[in-house]
Image (cartoon, rainbow, N blue to C red; front, side):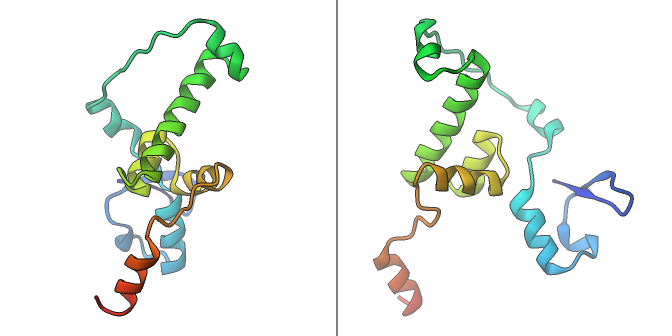
Length: 127
């Protein structure tokens, strides 16, 4: 599900971007900037609780909420770097858009493309 702005600036729920009539380059932009439907997330969520000594927050100079957000993003980036999850799934886990995830990958010096040179060569040469 996508949250797509209509001609009045309001957001509509759209299941298929092709049905919107937007030009292809704008559809690419929307795909890269989509966020998960917040109503869909509440249907199946799991809460995970970690206990930290209060000094852990001071070490990173983060408030507890910021610390939790940083952990979520760091885990998603690490799992993406390891090839455990796709970019889309990493963005979802981190509660970021794809564009925001790409910025996080750049900031953390993690390659956005997880294809090896051998895999790329095989793909180019039809192997």
